[in-house]
Image (cartoon, rainbow, N blue to C red; front, top):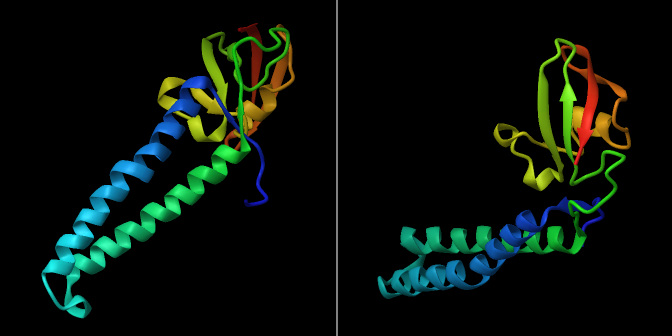
Length: 156
């Protein structure tokens, strides 16, 4: 196991990760084994590009399995039942920008980040700045374009 930090997941995100691991251990391994068998049937392995490609796919799949298993060992499930008075991983936070526009963000672990769905990582500048703050507080976020202030309107 690598010496990395905890990975935070929602129930849905953890299920997706487990499904991917299961698929790689079963379906993908079987498909690669079938490709290897077919490539072996073609003859001379030293000049067999199909065999080499299948071996490379096998190596990449096994590497991804090890990576997923490591992430799962460090995984912590976060729920929506946590503290509602402070922003935590798993919180849905409504903030107002300096212009008064309200935006809703879900604070998630780095593996589940999806900016198009307003899921921001707890490790991002905004996510990190919001953590631990309460409703009505103003948070100053340092970004490459300068500091931006957000007022926390609601926490779910």
